[in-house]
Length: 506
Image (cartoon, rainbow, N blue to C red):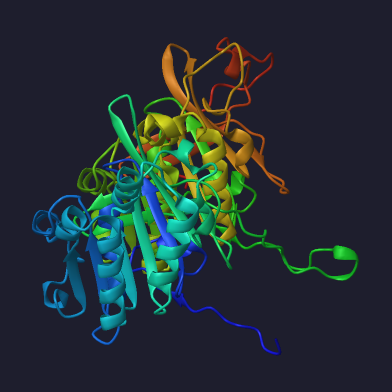
């Protein structure tokens, strides 16, 4: 061979599936879509068929001993991808029930062959192939799949058609089965029930000539059909420009939080592309700080996205104050509230990246990690830390500066920054606490860490006013504040006043 043969990749028309497949479906490939009943096989193959069918290269959809074609069409027409104008023009449905009853397997294969030769289709689908297998077994008393499958595949692909066999199979049946050996592509669909939560997943177990994304990918069936959420893959880490001997020649720009005193505590703001965890008990001001972070970005021409899991978007926008509702209406800020109790990390990332690209956003807030974990389907909560690591890596790899809030109960016997053991995933941590001073409950704040950057180590008192967070003076006259038993330092000056809400210092 003097020249390399290039295989054209066909768009499937299924959101997210082309990415999972590694760029689309190989043209003229012989594919098997397998799974238990109810997993979405027929809906998926219909969606692909309507996307690929053309008048000059129509699609042939063969049904064998399964549900009647009219019944199937009645339900499939409810999806938006179903184009009635294509039926009998670019898409033809052929029922092989009479051939199966009167002539058996030979008659079925002959009808398929005749239709393919007469039409020169671009797409051929047999649903369900399992019916043909059962027919062959009943006729012969035994099943010679080693002969049947290559013969059928040769007939279907001989006319340069992209072919799909649809069948009800269990994963255990994939071993030593000629169907799976001959197929160029093998797509397996699953659905599982866990504590009243139903999750659909798919896996590309095989695809010749290209590299699909490995692993299980979640998907949903909506009014628009199948929507796939590709599994998170962490790309190469972005590095900063370096000079001789690998020395960094350009520092990360800093982003303001929207509170001058907090910026000072952070050493000048949050380094661009960093992830920040704001940890504190309920009511300590985490959401208010996150909202000011987004507000400040909008003021500076840096749109932001907020994923909320404890309020609905309208409620969040109306209660955040500071003209936040107006920023949402003007398209400077987007609020995402995805379906609770059955989410996957991949679906959340899909919603976030869509909003990021739409707004050209530079800032993202997740409020809160505690609510996020509860919103996930139970099967995804088990590996929440691993999944969160991948989500943070993908977003910061895009150059996004993100802030996450997490609820943390006040504990005076140990110092923890996250109930999920995820504090190490973030580049910076801001801690908020309640302390009792002279019989009053006060709020204090501290910057625990900023990776590769100097920062303040002070504990600062703060108040929450109508305008947001107001930071006061350093609490230097007490020691043991984080232990729950503060003691006045000998020779300490009088207790400073809390920050004045009427004349904020920041």
